[in-house]
Image 1: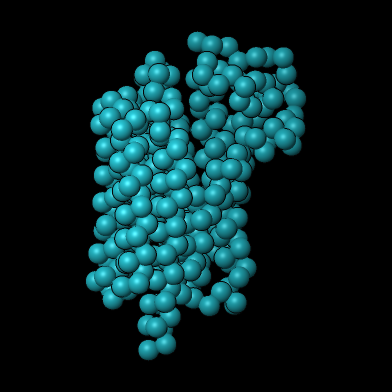
Image 2: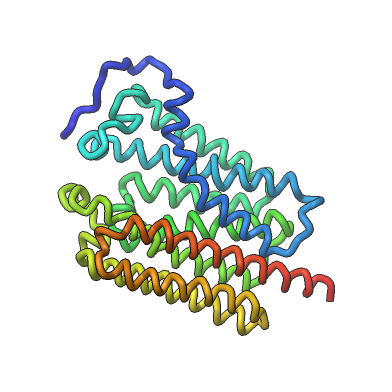
Length: 306
């Protein structure tokens, strides 16, 4: 097993920059975007509940997502010492057991903030936190299997923040339609996460991490990712049409059609174009999320007015 550098003593404290690197702010965008979608989809006037929504943004991004990054880096520290030795823990910039300590502190703070937002948000945050630890930590370590691990992250990064935001904005659980759309976008994110796995096929195969590209080959994994992303968005379109939200359905259909064109190009060279499609296709995917949220918000406003 690769050894982690010990030039920094276990008694040392990490620098602020090392803590920030551990928490990876760039990864906070997906749950914060999903949170924004949930708040908009609720249709609630946010003037009276702006503090709750602001706390929810803090909870979804820096706290829960930051916690998940710290947990993941701690339990992957020996793997990272081989594949990515410059990361903050294997490089020694996060000394001793500070990676684990920060993950625990962040978990406690996350649940404390969630408690301020009421029992429903607290419950959702507890589920998200449990999934974050289960994804990386033994005995579960969901990330060892691409089917399970990517599903866990998709639900944690998209569905839970959406539902949490709608609940925080309304003060009670959102409609079943809202919940179903949030669930579909979380399931579709499984495909987005599969795109991420193409960049590390060789290392994952050597380390026994069964991502979809490792399990099924690059071509089949690419087809699975496209099918998952496409079928879940098709489900959203059907729900919007069923609810009379034709404009929203047309907008989501338009971004799905554009994704389809990109998918054709991606499938011709999955390994070579995974990063390209992740940038272009995912941008379209999250645009559809916002279009759906705006449509749902308009329906909620109309329902409340009626």
